[in-house]
Image (cartoon, rainbow, N blue to C red):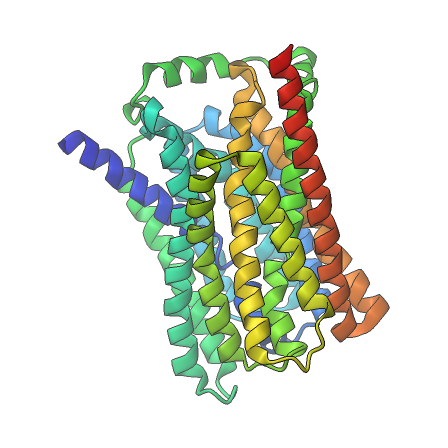
Length: 422
């Protein structure tokens, strides 16, 4: 019993770490207009910052599995949280645009290259074989819950300091940044002190054996095992479409404030509610997928996301404010259901155990490419159509990508059926 308590405590720390490292990086989802005002930059500048972040992410995903095997996973996690926290303290000083770019590159390196595979590996080691499904499900939903709780505290700080009239926005945004930075620094210490490392954390000898097998030479034969698997490409493409649609979440707050005229504080309130849709969407979607059919529920979530995005883009701005707020919460629920389900397809890909880690890195590389190009596409629409219509055009683009996501899920499902019939 005590042994299980120790495992659960370590798992809790990993969930807290994963939930605390990304919110500051994606602060724009709740405070986009305030960031533009306080840092004195344009939306095009902000998109350029996030495209730079995306490049750092893309470079880091594939080799993150290799570095997690080479070095202590818990020390990599602790280092990542510490460096990201320090960069957050720098960010709170409201540096120049050029220095903000440097900060985001640091975040990109230390939140993916040294953290992504390391934290997934630690969960794999801590979970017993029969617990892996629920542990990874709780990891994603738990991250969402941590992000939502932190966002509520951040909103309280922002509201108290800003004064409601925007006069204290600089100090209020700094208070929010300090909150997230200090939480990361605290988690860095807790992970280093209380999370066990390597084989000490493993509950399954098979995990160690597979981990040792995974340390194979990376050569043409290994690469062929990965790129020769059609389902790896299909899954990467599904995540690509799903993550492109998920990027729409980061623009929902800005849309409410600029297109609908909602106050900054009200926008933050709506986006905090939307954050709670991640644990709800992930857990409910996972339950429905187990109960019925993964592909069916994933396609349905894609479909409802498309309908919601088209509603935002096409319904006149004179419609009631409450309508747009409700649609945004609904879209967040559907998009987070997609996010909670697309990695569940991994078990259907029939990936050789010896290249599982590298395959996850390759799928991540394909699937998270939107981190780079989506902000650029947003800038293109803003340049072509202006701020108001550009936002609407961007949501139509997201809806189109959602339709492609549905088609790819159908192709993936048929591919599995054909393999099973052979």
